[in-house]
Length: 340
Image (tube, rainbow, N blue to C red; front, side, top):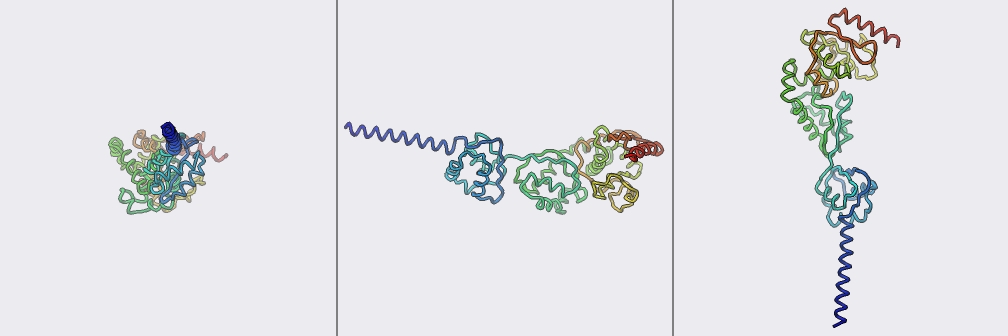
């Protein structure tokens, strides 16, 4: 009887110990923190295999125990349920937590910022490809898909006006087409009732406003001057005077190194040549900032027809109503730059 009792006690003790060991193993495998480091990003491309995932995790150097992770992944059948995406590995994250994210596809959004002088679709595609899975070749393909562009209400020349510089949160796996539809959604949101009414008041469509804003943005970076410059061009449009905007000539030349526009440049045959053709060019010459679009919509009313860079060379301009006054301003500027 005593021997039997001892046997029972030993079995019970063994079971407790085994249970504790099992609990420790379960805890270490599934629930204990296994991620170190600050916000490492794990990228899992489409069609990535289990081995590729393990290699990426090992190279990241943020997994304390790959053995524990593999054990947990095997138990939870991760190999058959890998979802592509960008996942942020946060300090303190457990294997179960990370595996669940990957199986469910709970990605971390990436911040995609449109900024700088974006003058063509190639530059735009290059910029976008740095933040999403698709490469620039795949992006440029949809950017130049004329039937898709047409379905959005644009043509190849007006298309740049759809893209508004800002920071957007998207998923790394977003397709080029989905991304462009997102930009169209943001464009429609930006052109709210108030902005549309302002555009009607100045006699321009939203695309024409963006086209004029693209010229204004290339003329001056000074926010306080942009409504004045917009007013000059709107005065010219109303009087049917050619815009004679040097930035449109630089756009035609497609050479950022050009510092001065020469007389021979003014005869270039192009619909973007605002010296030869009255009215606005057929589309934006650069993707303008939202603030510059608003500077056109909220332009400064005045009688100026001309403007010229100040001889102070600080980026500001002198404005003039008459050609004689403008020529005086131009000579003062030319005297300074001729000495440089």
